[in-house]
Length: 161
Image (cartoon, rainbow, N blue to C red; front, side, top):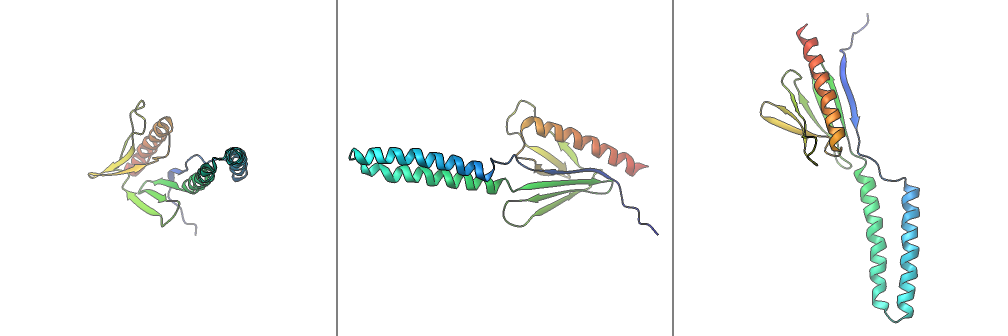
């Protein structure tokens, strides 16, 4: 006896654009370190030694920023739509994932205006809204919204048949 699985109308994993590869980040960091070291040695030779800690702090802050961007790039969202359920799993870079579930018949996609930077892409149902794909650009959000609207329409039609 075979078990028939329900059809999936939309299945996407959304990820932010990753930073450079770790080796490239290390090369950039080493180049900045070399330049800062050269300037620090120059200032020390001229008697301006109090500047050297700031040159080191500059490199440390850059290293921290590179690390933070790599950690932030680990987050992702998984959207899956069947005729009975739209599930959205938010996976933060650290911590536990959260899952939101919607009835595809009632959920609406509220797309951002194309010329408004940073406008949210929302799933709205029964007075509640969920912001998705916050890390995507405006055109990517519009494309996702259109694809999701079409998939929701297909799921609704399937449900009615």
